[in-house]
Length: 286
Image (cartoon, rainbow, N blue to C red):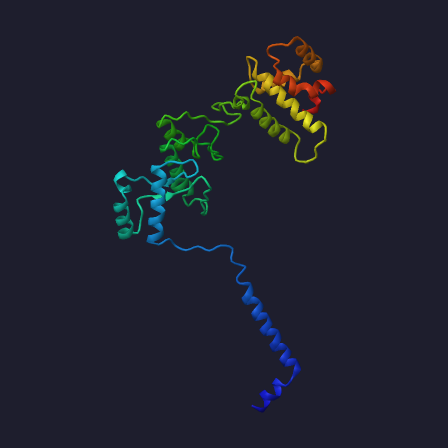
């Protein structure tokens, strides 16, 4: 006992005790910052509330609340009384419902465990059952379209009278995509400007450097060429490119403007105004 009293009288020992107490208080105040997320297994109450939310979204469609599901179910199983009885007795809903699916969905699992077959394909078929448009990126498809999700999802969609189009550049079965189809007519300046901006941002590369003059001017030339091509018999990117490759292009624009050519509308003239003033050529863009 005397030894303990003597030890407590030592300043160094008291200093160690003070440091230990200070660190303990500091750690208690900070909490467990190393925990990235928390999860618990869904009980019957959670499953029931999720199923009720899903059925409400299925019965009353809203674009901001899309419900998908993995697994088929009968209409009589959507009755709230029967649904509650099934979940409370068996602990399983009639299907794996995914309400508010338009926000995001992440399917996690090791390779070959059945993520695509068991979950992703089932969610896609539920979207087809509800007549939702689908844009599917399938990197597993083979040279002839075999493998991956194309055979199953494509056949299922065609069976439900979908218009299935496969875009696979270099393949014989590939369709074509014309970005100018999104432009309604030669007066649709908003969509033309949006497409021109995306093209211009991608054509300049990853350097991120933009000239204060040629950057906006190049985008304006793209925008105007899209509107001009839209008013021709071949409204596509090939026509837009061919127009920009014409010799003496700025002079031709000035001539068309003075003659008030019907295919050189006021909207197109506004877009090309900067190009004709400074005699821009296609070298600004390509």
